[in-house]
Amino acid sequence: MSSGSAGNGPVDNGIAGGGIADSGTAGQDPGIRTILRRETRSSRAVAAGAAAVLVIAVCVYGLLESALRVIGQPPWLIDPQTAAERLVDLPAGISPLLLGATGAVLAMFGLVFLLNAVLPGRRARHLLEDRRVGVVVDDEVIASSLARRARAAANVTQEQVMVVVSQRLVVVNVRPTSGVPVREEAVQSAVEDELRAMAPSPMPDIRVNVAVSGVVGA
Amino acid sequence: MNGTPRVLNRVLVGILGLVLAAAGVLFMLLATVPAVAQWWRQWSSDAYRHASYLAEQTRIPGRQESWLWVAAAAVMVILIVLMVAWLAQQGKGRANMIVADYEDETTPGEVEIGGGVAEQALKAALAGRADLAAVTVATYEVQGRPGLRVRVYPRLGVSPQLLAAEISGLIESLDSVVGRRVPVLLHISGGTRARFSRAERVR
Image 1 (cartoon, chains in turn cyan, red):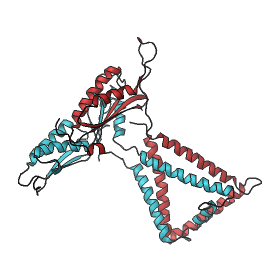
Image 2 (cartoon, one colour):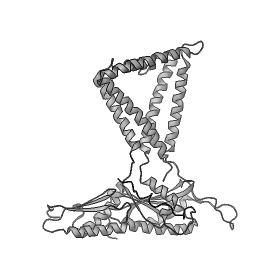
Image 3 (cartoon, chains in turn purple, cyan):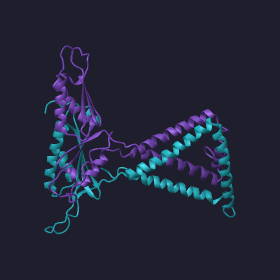
Image 4 (spheres, chains in turn cyan, orange):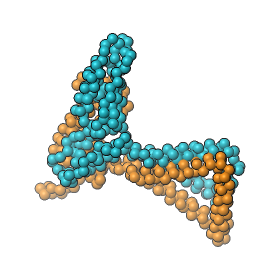
């Protein structure tokens, strides 16, 4: 999680504008740049949908109760006037435990919404450089590609390699086959090679862990 | 790539979060701290008295009810409409044409090329590949002009840079077919579809 993220790297150098500009990489097209910046962050559409549905539900319920009151019918759950009165003398009329629990649940939901709005919401994706198109890659894809190279270099099976890719770090965990030593440098250089060819931005560091205990019969 | 209003989402979700969190904290304090309970009773009964005085003043002539109820109902209806409008903004921005009103002196009239041309061409070009589990292509409107979003689901172990270079080549040939460069986003996605497919070992 760092500020120097990819899409907003070097400032546009004048080639901007025309869709038919032939030279330059896709990263220099301001439209593509905006798209890439948006693609690496969450849109919060789910939180927005939940918030809108919540507000609509509360409003519909409020309308229902006030309509019932206006036409003189008995309230469905609680009459608005009674609700206001109950709210006014609050600590009384309800057990403190229930009140506290309700407050805790409300505060928790509020905090979830608030954090959703405030946090950067970066997605587990990296950008690749390309002449023509803007490319975003899910970290899972990078991890499986690096795992394939690491597996080939360490000469182990697919299950013995686990790769975790995060924004700034790639962790390669290798469990060697019992009795067959794994050269850590070989794995490191293979993964480095693949990562350099891929050139994701931001470029992560590599850490290789070779487990002390091996796997029998793999 | 779509036109989801991100800043608006953040602001409105943040406001709702603040309101909920404040109400929750108030309830918790009411339940636990006696001083807060005392302050709340003072403050809320004052507010309630003020509100009922206001309701007395604003009574609809000839009826018992205040027109404040009507106003409150109207506000709620407006709020519902606004919320529905906000929901409708999420994920919008699909377009039909990748080229419209083609400016060309030699062509009288307009040329329009539907997004389906690009979508079908790319899908057909990528259909036979063993290293892709699935491909989706969609046309979106980006900052007033059309753009393509290509999403591919590679099988396990496929190198994304090779895939990107090959698809980039396909897009360049599409450019020469369509006659105009549209912004293209290539999303190389690891989804459940890729995770449960067999690994690609030979390329």
